Image (tube, rainbow, N blue to C red; front, side, top):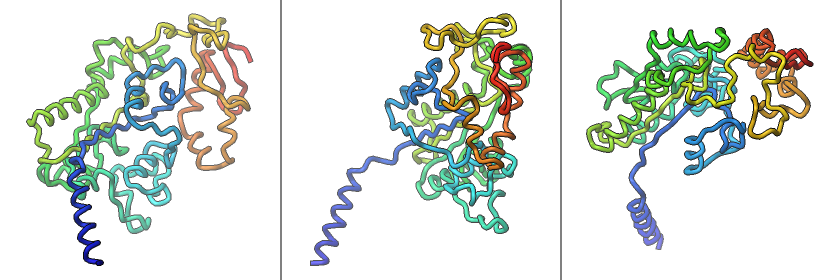
Length: 331
């Protein structure tokens, strides 16, 4: 009787296995500094993200997901290794050692580490391909460049490429700095094809088209293609066609008027709409952090205060935490 059930189980398992689809190809997209402002996340009303919204509508959207740490290096090291920050010992960007695997050693009692792409490559029989910033250091990305041909490499990736904008393009950005100071602004549309994120997407499409046509073998395996987009990380130089009509080129030219949407519920809008603020007042979320905590220290070490201080010099917005909210010279 027992043998009958074993045989029945094996037959059923084989039948189910025969019905399963082949291993799917995986496109993994990771983005720097992306907030929940897109419409599909009930975010900022002036942010238009049609492609992200379409992706969310066709897939599965998690509205209550959290990073293990609010920082680039610690978050990526944790997610890609499947270990929390207490294990990785990467608590902020300054803790991160350029070579990913050098963050794991016997001294820290965390020498054992496997990465998501490594497991997919070695155990899942995937062809793993990284384009730009997937691990924190995009020039390394846990790639064994000396490991032989693409089909026999160690570490995380069978193939990796990393590129940025050319020096001539980044030099041209200087002319488009906002107020001549801040590292963001509207650049000519014809520069778009030279931006790194455009080239990332273009490279990914070329690979997938070649794979579909059979001219890209990928070692005869399904692919795990990881794309690391930089935007909206600074520096934020964006083609002018993506800027809305109400964008104010120079706030100095409208001193004395309100740059913010007024009244607050006006539609169509006549100025910036501020993101939702804590009901207790400006920076209440900052003050809610435990005094001297890792979270508050991370906030203090970031660009928040220096950016706000710079904006205040031009009479454009808030003061840093501890000050009084100011807008156009009024309190």
